[in-house]
Image (cartoon, rainbow, N blue to C red; front, side, top):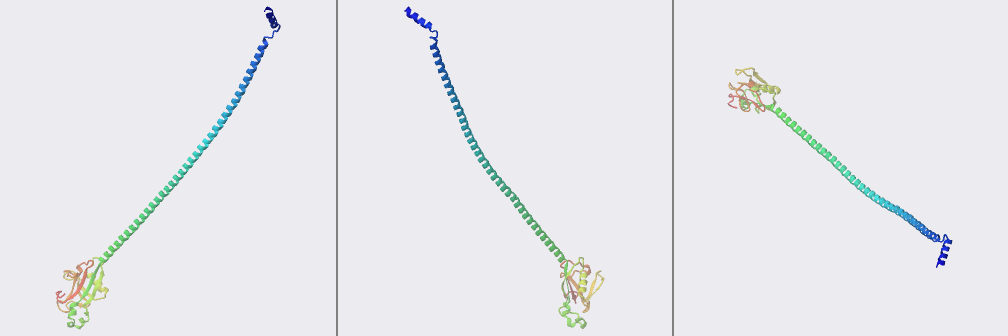
Length: 274
């Protein structure tokens, strides 16, 4: 044993690198393994990084696409909403315009109604004015008519005894007994029976004779149509009546009013035969 060990020791001592070689080989193998392992891990890590980046970029692209889709959808929705709003706005605007048109038409209608009512009012006022003017015209016509009276002269008592009268008197007495028919006379206001008598007889060119004053202080008619008082007897002469009654005063003292009827008649008995 000593020899073998000695030999082995010699061998070992004779080969100084004999122990280091296996260690170097092991070290190299380990280094190689570690190197290749590290490279593989780095390649794997690089590959995974690329893959991740690709995935990230792909995800981002997908997200971008989805975002774009969502944006387009939202834009489409917004566009639809905007179009709907525009439609609503157009509808509301059209309704407003229609409303304004109707509103404008309603004032026009109101204005036309008002104008129509105003026209009716003016027509009514004009008709009222025409009526009032017609009424005033009627009133004025009535007033004008109120300024009229009636006048007549008769001698019926002489007609009854015409044959007994002198020839000169018979020629003056008409067969009808009417010297002046009932005549409408316009009044001027404040005229007396004498004024009317004188005016009418002069217009008709019929003879009249009167005295300015008498014992009664008024004018006195003594002859009409050349027929004088007391031509028949002492009780004969001319008497006047107003509205069928003897006034009791002289003809120049009696004022004539509207629609009064003045009648002159010849009496043969101081009015008892009339």
